[in-house]
Length: 72
Image 1 (cartoon, rainbow, N blue to C red):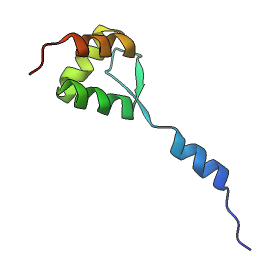
Image 2 (image 1 turned 60 degrees about the horizontal axis):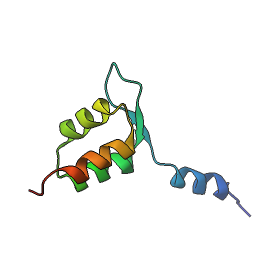
Image 3 (image 1 turned 180 degrees about the horizontal axis):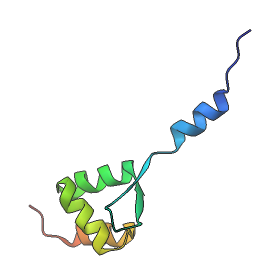
């Protein structure tokens, strides 16, 4: 019977890819968090990157800033 490493496949699905925010930064965030920031904040890709860089990748600070913004 041909068996595969299903545990390894499950682990790969649980982890989301991380990416660098820019050439000069070393901050990494999971892709799903980045997508959530753009959706909740109603901001574009560049705006989300700038916000994450401004807060040095501190997600809690980013979400606090998004919640403090006036509704559009």
